Amino acid sequence: MATTLEIINGISQAAANAYDGALDDKGEPLKVGLKREEGDPILDKRVMDGFSVRFVGPLLCIHYHSEVDLKQVHGNSFESEIEQVINDVAKFLKKEYKRITGNALTLTKDGDPSVNLEYLSRVRCWVTSYCYYKIGGISDVEEVKPGSKDRLEKNFKDWLNQETDKKPSNVKRGKEKEASFMPWNMSK
Image 1 (spheres, rainbow, N blue to C red):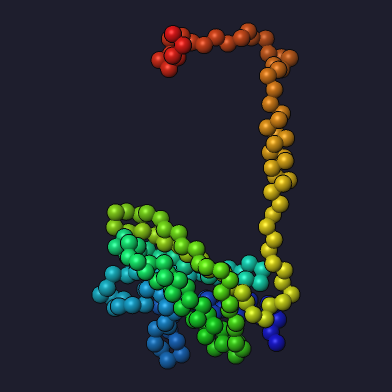
Image 2 (spheres, rainbow, N blue to C red):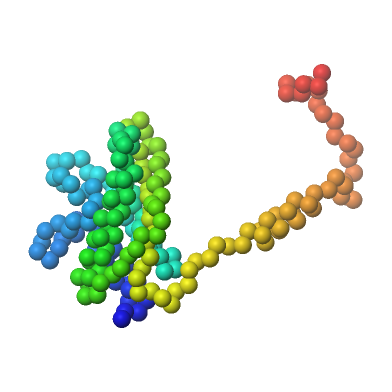
């Protein structure tokens, strides 16, 4: 049984082995499941996409980012395509983890993926997406708990309640008059 540190190091190494242009043991390009692997790298337009991993307690968060054409966004299956790419990345991480460590990795999807789309131009958009997976074999890590909002809200309310209409004792000027010549003064 692998320790938590060994599992995290194995997943990190598996993700690090997926750099653009990586080759497998036979000298073939490594297939992760990203769009940049399709077509000819010299003749075709390069697709900018990639992924990263982040650990949140016993969860693995897989982030995917890509530049897409606006035509693809308006299709019916855009979100399912993004979800499929994230699933392909998770499958690659399992396979690469097995190759590196010799042990199997269990990743169980925890919720639906979140897909965010940002407008770049009239032709392209930037998509960022992430999905959480429970890592099997990690038991001694606590889940991340949400922070308490009560303390922050109380401090903020106390700060707002400090407002007063009293003048400090060192102020000697009289009451300020509104300038009647200003164009935004509509009192006249």
